[in-house]
Image 1 (cartoon, one colour):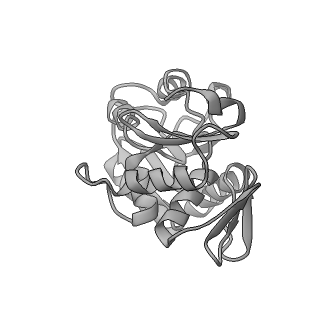
Image 2 (image 1 turned 180 degrees about the horizontal axis):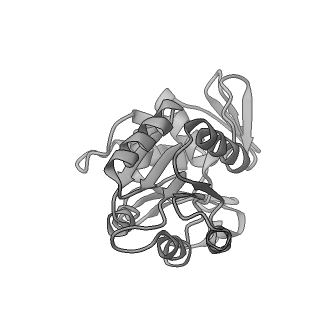
Image 3 (image 1 turned 90 degrees about the vertical axis):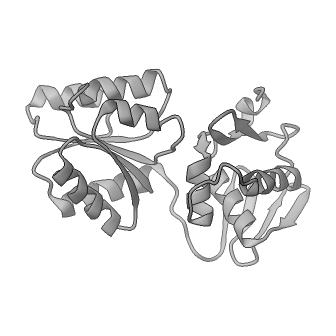
Length: 234
């Protein structure tokens, strides 16, 4: 998972990032609410870790803004020194999925992240086949089949298609797609991602004629829309 960390203490922020990355996740750290909210215009996160007390805005306000203005359902864990019962209730009612009290206990914190990951996101398996929204992904042959169709893909195209289907209905930033599939940041002058997206859309019939549509999100990235949402305009 790609995890965003909103923590103004630089020592704790570095330590937290190291702990999370030791479990195989990637991280991006922010020391102000403003920096974090600005990053949402070009980044996609799978999980967020918020401190409560920040220099410019408290974590609860950031969470409420995330849920209302950005319409984001990205899971949030609070990690904070604020530990009274009412504070915990306030965070959970605002939309947080979990609440941990400082000091950081690495093993416990990673266990909570793993529990959220199992509950919210699908578990990848290295062999066999996986089915998403009527499309079957053969992980060995790198072949995708669906009612009335079949297509075999190169490694990068297959992984890109798989990631899009795993995250259906989520708006995915260009940077996240490039990092996930190619292991590098997006080059603003490169058309690599766009060419792969165009081929996937064409070969899998994701043009809105069926129940799925692969659309561009202007200035941000791409989104695979399912079922009723597939009829929306770009």
